[in-house]
Length: 192
Image (cartoon, rainbow, N blue to C red; front, side, top):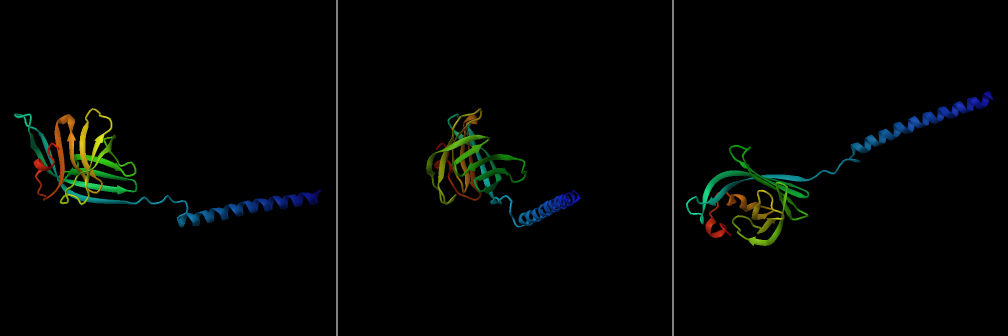
């Protein structure tokens, strides 16, 4: 009986030592695999670029309600952040980065744009082409559902960003043009 007890004790001790050994071995292997990249999340690629733009605001003339006149002209900074599936465009003031002149998110796989959570879909491809502004044509987008401050149609391409936007609630047209460009806004884009 004593002999069986000693054999059982040795067997239990062997099982415990084996279990502890395997546990330590398993932890050490996992540590090495974690160091070599196993179990890591894949890195998301992104790129950030900045460009100066000039922001023009045209609104209704207070005397002649048929005319749109220049109300504001400001130099701004476009920050474009491109990720795997989205491109985020943010327009801020040059002198004060807290001045916000708009932002939007372009979702590549949907070819849709989100402004303040409202979805805008493509309604016309290649509606405006001007090689001085962008080597790519601008597409026409419009909101799906009109909210409390609806945006009208606007021109956009994923390389350049916003070019023109109608703000229906304020009867204004906004333009985001590159600095130093000579373009006749009234002939090419205003009220079009």
